[in-house]
Length: 343
Image (cartoon, rainbow, N blue to C red):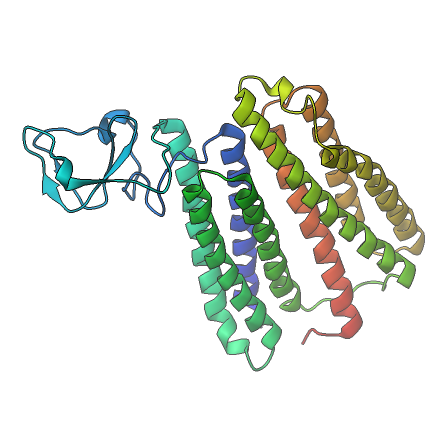
């Protein structure tokens, strides 16, 4: 009955998580300004691969919007024209949203892949919304959250533009990340409400309360982790990417709260595991949760004590989003079963 809804919700979730992973890779590699304009990249749909492509050349055709780097500044072609033997400044206007004018082919293509995945996620969610329209009377919750997903991905695209225009302002990057989690939440609601299933046994009230408490702790930890990452971003600007040993040499209070709360997260989820075992309810979710928490703790230790080994930052972020998704999915399944929302 919900075959197309389920298929495109699944596809959308997979691509959104790929976007989150790609975004984390962009931050890890410092590729956020690999494409200094938006939505194109140096004024092209397919970005350049060599610095020479961004140089002014005589007897060369430039199309409106194409970008060149001249004297450490970005210049934009105001119309389509062919250059003469000498440079004519009247045909170009300066890019005024920021003063970042550096080309790095690796950074450019990492950022371009991130944007390409973002566009694919938007297409998948648009198709999902199209299939949801016929359910707006029979099961409006599917239509409503499909619409929210579509609006959410459009808002994400706009946020991506503001991040680039601000030259990677840490606060805007953090909002961008939180919006991605909200988008995952919207899609999970569609996923759960379009499936007909029952739980083998409904968890007791104390287990549900503990699950809600652990989920709340996860959200708090994610918010604190984002704040720590904002601090790390400022330290990266100060020390550079070659001196990771100084990024957390003198951390702010948020870091210590984030680290200490991890003990409470482990304790609460361990208790939830023992209660779930004792009650003989579905254990697949709590097992996945414990594995994800274990991975999070391991990566956190590695980053702090071993100076941010390669890929630990993006993996830490991606595991946190998986943890958020698994916990929310379990909560939604429980409440779907309790209130019998499935058809």
